[in-house]
Image (cartoon, rainbow, N blue to C red; front, top):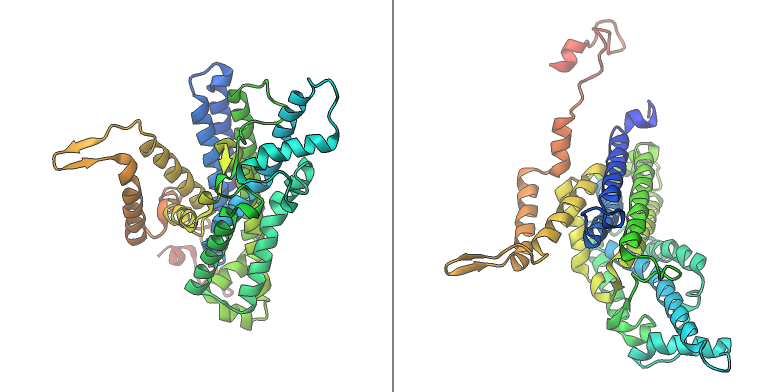
Length: 409
């Protein structure tokens, strides 16, 4: 690959500039700064940036490696659960410690632990911390698990699937089955993660009890924007080099790449694991803004949404994945907010909340049939670059073999 990183990736400065401009504008006009943007809207924008990061990770495996994974939402949810355990345990411990401090005899650490466990797990009939909560008292450990747990699941699953050379629709079905199995396990109370109740109250940040939610929403917006910017930089660096060229080769003709001597399974496993780690980070930033994470968030239909976003935005284009996720997420929030008045068309009443999924499906079909390159294709048309200006210089090995005029014809 020749040329500088930015010359090979002109979308990078544009995307970073757009993220910076969005963060600056939202910060200035946010409720925390005395502006008119509500806290709920700031949270919606922060969550949208997290979804864009998850779509970016999805595009790495599907758009560049040709692996249609319908299990990425599992990694998204696991990232939320990992950080949610620390948030819930630390916040509950602060509340319990404050309540027990009024007693004449100071409580022992074991009594505090028992009280915290009772508060968290009493709803599922338990009074002790399960094994999966072993590191919930350490923020550093749980932040590491945000990356390690999704990556480990992807590595194990990917090693088994790719080693068996499962491809195409069969691999998609297996990834969806993995997601469903994980969700069903989490629905059980003995999973250690509160079953159907999930983890709630995640918007309450330990140590920030006196900080208004409007300011906390800005913190998460900044964090989500930084994660998306770093994720975009990393992804662009990967796909613009030799690694990305091999991935595209695997996508277009896996057998030929294997014949050339490249370890196809290793490349697929590497990008699948990296995608899971990035998606886990996106989930860890998303669910504290949503306030709750439960197994219903990890049902297979959510992974299909990720694929729809990437398809609408234009797979194989990093900016397409971001555009698709942002566009669909914001339009979805608009139509499902309940603020849009329903339309009474006589025998039919158009309820936007109910019809939104129909509109999304119709949009997906329309894009697939009429604009296979997605919304990112519109960007391509707008910013189409001309061929190199060689001023009539020879383009072939021999003098006059192929000149600029012939290349443009």
